[in-house]
Image 1 (cartoon, rainbow, N blue to C red):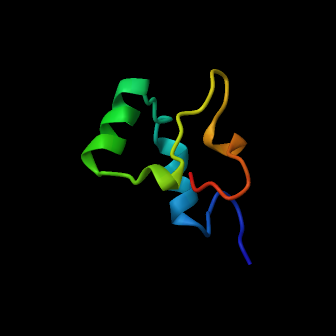
Image 2: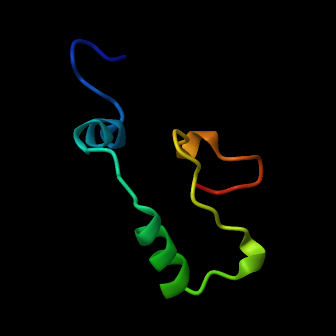
Image 3: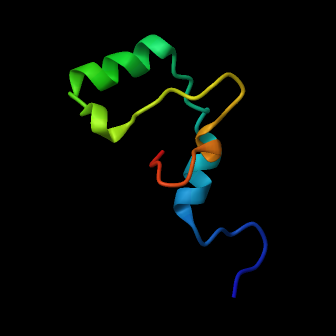
Length: 61
């Protein structure tokens, strides 16, 4: 049982302190190129206004 401000999930606490990641198209393209992602993986940069939460079924974010 938890009381007060004590949190049971330290990962949740740490995530709350981290700023959101901001990726540019150039950074994404460099990741794909440098790690040699196969075209068959279908890696794609999200459209304007989308986030990882908007990934289509079957995509890993």
